Every structure is written in C-alpha cells, then in structure tokens.
Length: 178
Image 1 (cartoon, rainbow, N blue to C red):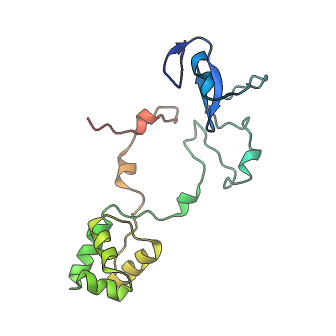
Image 2: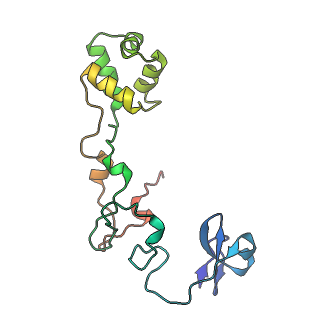
Image 3: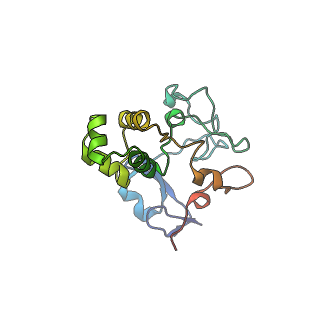
C-alpha cells in the first residue's frame, strides 16, 4: 500500500499525475487535480529521485560543471553557481559595528564616507539587511575588516548526519523547534 501524495489516503494502485510541474503519485480520487502522466514502458533501475546516468542528460543543456554528478557512495555533489560565491559571516553586523566604533565614526559619518545612505548602515548593523557585494567591498576596504565566512558556516562543520550510504533525507537535515 502506498500513500497518496495529495490527500494521504492509502492506495494500492497509485496513478502519476502532473500538478503545476510536479509529478505526484495519487489515489484515483485525486487524479482530477492534474493531468495523468504516462509511465515509460521500459523498466529501468532508476527512480524518479535518482541521479544516475540513465536519466535524461540532454535537458540540462550542458549546464553541469565538469560533468560531475552526485553519487551515493562517493559523497560528492554536483557543482553549482553558489560554490564560487563567498559566504557572508553570520556575525557581519557585529563586525561592522565594532570596526566603525573603533574608528570613532557615527553611522551617518560612515555612510557619508562610503557614499551610501545612513539608513543602510543602520540596517546592516542591526542585521536587518545583507550588504550587496559593492557595499560589502566598500565596508571591508574602508573599515579594514573581513565580512566573508572562513571555510563555511559553523552549522555546516558541526553537522555529521546522514546515512552510511552517503545519501541524505530531509529528516537528516531539519532541526525541530520543540
């Protein structure tokens, strides 16, 4: 018995439908909410969540970097555009405020020197907004500080969840607020 991904009822023969671009296995009562997807007749070992080479690679348009794909035993993952970006430190607001105070500047004086609005400096120091790349580089050069996180966030380095096979589920990553 399989659970319907739309309403949650148990069904022995789920049908695959497409609802706003998502493929769902649903019971016969929920098939009216989408269009039925015909399953290919060839039975391959790949599932709909698999990243094996049997899945269609022509749809990516060559967007993968170096052709590396995720493998369940290797623990490596596909490269994306965010790998090349610097991560902002979690305490960027404190770093900016402390450096400004050490230089003896007010928020409005710092804003004038950076040619930015004082309200932007206030929001950055409160942690209400993230500085854009240009503002971040201005702050770093003017105050002599580093706002990029060193080697990833502390949460990433502390976490050691996951199964022995190297594949992860949402339950491995999520933190409950009990």
